Amino acid sequence: MKVCYKKLHKININYAFLFTLTKFEFFFNKSADEVHYLLSYTYKKLNIRIFKDWNNCILGKVGCHMSEIQVAKTQVSEIQGLVDWLASFGMAKEGGVTRLLYSEEWVQAQAALKQKMEDTGFSTYFDQVGNLFGRIEGTSEKKQVILTGSHVDTVVHGGKYDGAYGILASFLAVKRLIELYGKPKKTIEVVSLCEEEGSRFPLTYWGSKNVMGDYSQMSVKDMKDKIGIPFSEAMTEAGFPFNEYKTRKREDIHHFVEIHIEQGSILEKGQSDIGLVTHIVGQKRFTITVNGESNHAGTTPMMERKDALVCAANVISELTAIAKTNYPQLRITTGQILVKPNVPNVIAGNVSFTLDIRHHESDILEAFCHQAIQLLHQIADRSAVSIDIHKWTDIRPVSLDTKLHDEMKNNLTKKGFKYTTIVSGAGHDAQVFGQYIPTTMLFVPSKDGISHSPLEYTDSAKLEIGVSVLMDYLYKLAY
Image (cartoon, rainbow, N blue to C red; front, top):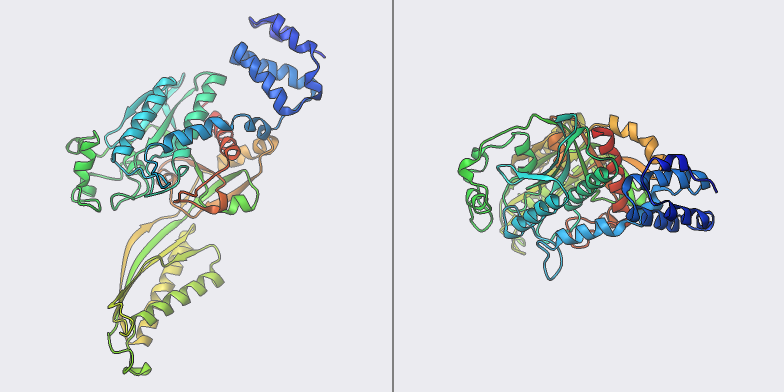
């Protein structure tokens, strides 16, 4: 068995230790995990640069080529441990994590993340609204920032992976890159965005939209949460004085990368390790109010009724059928219906229901919404009722940066990772950044597609694969 002694001779190492390893023929007959264990032991005994050279010398000679998947299996506990650790801030006894913007659990989580970043060598700072940044200064292109991370807030009784995994995977990826290659050429910042979900106050993307200068004091001046606490008061008590807050858009971010759980079942069903996100859907949400006439259920003839609920049911049914037949990639949902007087023996006189419509192409989204409004009026006329239509959400679809994905596909295949391109049906912070700067998004699989639930789960090995892929993407961008 030959070892590249000339290469190793340039490094100050313990030759006796290396010679001992070379005398044993473990490498020829052992599994990839066992070889990796020996190399990991070498890493601990010596230093990271020698570990890299030792990998090159030994593995290259004996032909024991481990796939990245096999290597990942030996490291799963690190990322899973971090996820479990962050989940402790807001974990309920009955299960699920609740970590709402500016709550006590939120404050504790951000403080703990800040400390962990500092302990690892990051310089840290908060912006005016509570976004936490961990910074590694670049060696030559300091003013070009590669930003990576996700959101720290959760829904009520949510899962422990949504958002949190993106922060921790980014932290771990940057930490490992520095250990392997030293500081990057471009500055890298890991961000724990303060809010994305809209779970406490009636707004979303408070974190990313402030980075991009999309919010102001007027946006939240009179806003209160469900128990009446003003936004300004909650923000100030969390340590971020509302009266000092001013809109500021960052101009130094060169690229944003977000890794996230899929929150769907496409990757799992396709047995894919990683999802390369190409688009994030646009969303339009409406509240439709149907005004009919309440009357006696037993004495009012069917032909004389002005039944608001029947009208609403027909609208929902017909729009769903149109979407299934003509727009297979479109999503339409009615998640809320309010009926008045809501009495068993009275015809419904008033019904209010929501329509959530999503697609990743603007033209199709606009066309379907136009068709939906026309159908609403037609069915209302047939039903002898009137309708009011209120649009309260209008988010444009965003095309993400696919050039970087294309450059990395061969690398993913070589490392044994199965990938698929995918459209995100959920909103993400990448959607905000993607309107202004090159933005890349990656998904890891979600078990049974479940999210926003205590049952939310991603296998630890898949989490580690995500970290490995994110490392490669960040290396490409910053080194």
